[in-house]
Image 1 (cartoon, chains in turn yellow, green):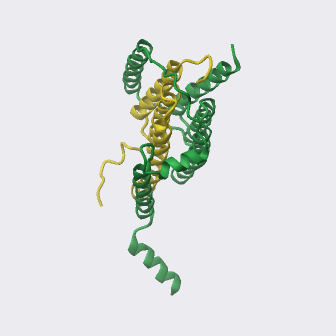
Image 2 (cartoon, chains in turn green, brown):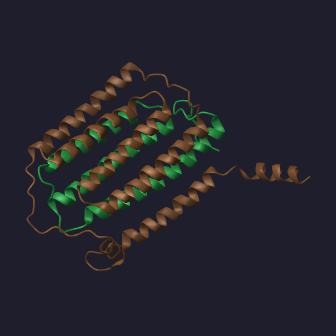
Image 3 (cartoon, chains in turn blue, green):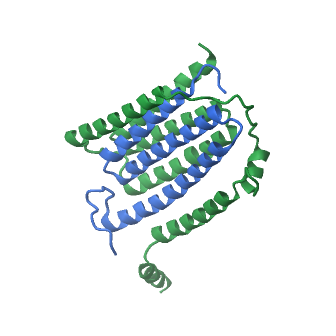
Length: 105
Length: 180
């Protein structure tokens, strides 16, 4: 338990980060910046899981392990997404989502 | 005000400001660097919560791995000096309204809810314990998600290589040309 900081502060911070990520996801057009917004969203969820684990269930480790798995999934997702982005760039010479409207061989 | 609170305020201001800059800046490389700052301050929050192992994972995997990967793909796909056009005003206003509405709803719910903390003793999180729980089949074990995630990682690795490599016939053509 951390002295002087209630759980709600962490949750509000994670909420702000999550919705900033949502805003970026909706407004951005470049695929890489969309990927960055998704990373922001995943990261805010991790803060939530860890704060809940530390404040409400300090005798368990569920939050720790699930945020570990979320980080792993995020890394796998970033690798695959960047492979796809590079492939799209090779075919269309752009990674603007509005110029890429056919996904076929 | 204790030092804990000062550190928390510092980290939260850094996270908020840099995440807003990440999604609004018009230069893509700067967006990646701002994302790096956000991830590093998140690792600081994990240190404050006393999860040292996860903070180290965050620093190596996120700040070290994913950001470097993103910067590489930026350098491969766009000019560094290139500036984006600003997003359409209508689109950005509506997106901001949607995000704000969601954020306000969530924050009101969070502040309204009464979280009841337990008074059970905190479990000490050391490396030996994490390794044992990851591989144990007991009540507190996580061997099934561990195995599933390892399969996912292999699948993602193979998939990334297959998707990103050049098409087959072109490559063999260039090889035969160089051999000749």
